[in-house]
Image (cartoon, rainbow, N blue to C red):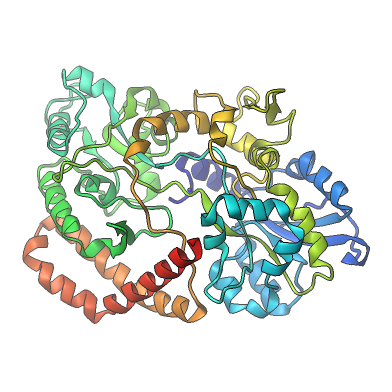
Length: 514
């Protein structure tokens, strides 16, 4: 979910790297046109887990709608090349399923290939219409700058309100007789003790890494919660701001430099790759890291997970507490119909079946009797994965999981019982401890084609410069001294235009909410 959830991504990336080629899973071997109710739909999977995800509930929806879906299932590793051929050659399917298939830019650049859906939704999708009325965010996010809706949206069930968390080694705290830190000053003192007092008790006072994680996670107490939809923009006092130009960013970087200079930050923070960082957190000889960020302890620390607990939301210099807000719940681009489809209304009537709570939980964990049980009182129970299998992978095998149309209403999560020893159940329990500190985040806005082109050109230079100065200042210091020249350089690179476009998109989004 950064951003995909860390535990899922690592398993999925490993699995996907072992497989090449298109699985071409199909619920129908027929090549009939949709004249007789057969539709070809392209979707993408992280790995080749077979076609069980198309059985059960999904197959039943086809029967109810009187259609047959010929699924073209591609692997993510091959999809970029396949997608280019499809879009360039015009040999389009009737529809694309899942936000992993096409980006906003793909749709904008090839807009003539896709039909606007808002009028068809009005006539053929009572479930989605009810969802729009119940949750205006869903419609606002799906509406393009030209006022049309080119793709169907989703709202995921059973997602945390916050997202990735900081986790601290409780065993190290106990070893040193330290209390759990509650403020950023106490946190700094704990990191110092971790580094200087042989916190892991192995007799080597030099092998501890007090903090290993990203910059925004460390400077979070200074009031810049990163969100799931933009790594550069956040919202303060109801207005969008570019985080790397905020005074809080400068102050946080100065504080982090002090910690780095005293050896409290992983010295290889800016030079190591993901596998190197992971090896330190998951060292089978024993824990080496005091604090790091991730989805859950098991996903982040592997064999050392039992030593870690979630760090409380730390009180910052302004007396407020902040947490990350990078748990994506909403998205668009989940179902797009091309101009090839001869009866799009029938296709949308079928898709409307996915906008119920029963549908959403089954397309997230697996059909009733496989991944979920529904009780007589309307509550649900997510079933345990078979012994020895990952709960996340089991869900992906048996459902569309993150992708495709979905919608759950207010308080839906309260109707569901999940295993809490890992996965989603554990994450939701952890989220209850910190989610009251969640702030507004920069939403999943949409851009015009012209804005996308401008942002693409501006973002490359701005991001490169911000990242280089950020790492320089953490390692060498100098943020305060060089701040004015830094801001001046960003402006020369087009910062004002970049922020203007982001604000325009933000204002359009707010207007669509009304």
